[in-house]
Image 1: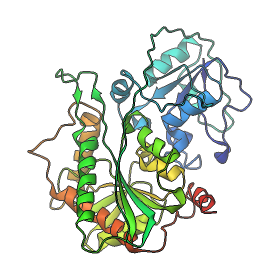
Image 2 (image 1 turned 90 degrees about the horizontal axis):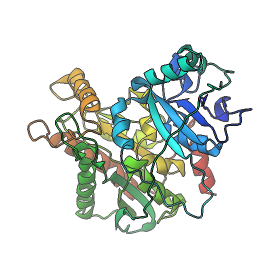
Image 3 (image 1 turned 180 degrees about the horizontal axis):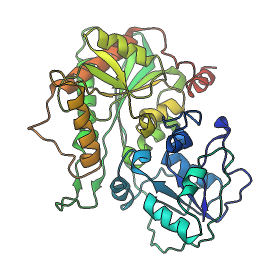
Image 4 (image 1 turned 90 degrees about the vertical axis):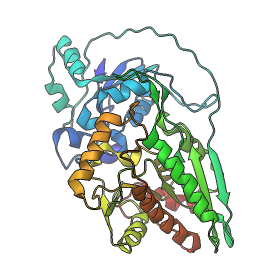
Length: 413
């Protein structure tokens, strides 16, 4: 077993350099080096890059020929408790059908709590300081000299789960499209909680966003002056299994990528009341951020930004697959500055949801605490920027420094 913290060549960091991990199990750390050791000069410091995401680490381990990959869980580094991964991994896993394609996969993937990794280090004659060393430039992975054996019964079935799409055709430039997205799936029936409830309803994540998508379609449909560009409403599947529905669309787009103006993604709407602010996830990525800033300031509100950049939220919902192919993508969450109650109140509610309800059976609709005015207010803002683009002739651009800017420029050639 080899512990490896992988980073891309872009950041002059490659822990696979000079290593042969074919047929071995690699143990990696979630997030990036800068987060673990608090060094702002490493990667993006506290802010997670895509290379810190667990999905990327599994993919890279497979590309390197590893037999298996185990990720060391740390609640702060992952931004959610270990129980979230227990719920997600202790059930059927979905993947895109890649038969006939040369796409490598590890035979075994999974997570281990950080305290368990310490026990493995001790068994190999090391201690937990190995985690600190692994985040230092020049670190070379060490073999633990341990053997991992497991037995599992694997049954594969091939089924279909559908994306659902609708459109309002543009009156003047129908070939240019603006895509609103929301994922309609959740976790289904899974691991019971302490009350014995095993049904994961996903009321906030993401029945709320799906309802918002339908409402957005209704409002656009009822506009007296129809948009000049086509407005698309895309409900994607299998987001909770790794953004699979949006990944499929990005790989098999119905509308040309270079004619797709933008993506606006809705993953969880405001449930606890109108806020003065709205939060952009992924500050400094695209001009869509400026569109939203202008729209909210006209209502007397203000734009704020994700304060938990270590969580890598920009890489954790369906807009990311649009960004990966160069389409400017906006992911805006509800704010926390609740009207009449302030930021502290809103932040408390957000933290409580993450620790108690996120990916838990308790993510249910609660008529005593959920209000509609906050969600409606945020939907109005997202409608405003979509309507603006629906009549514009220009395309919003990626900002300087965005890793997606060059991809867009290439797609337009």
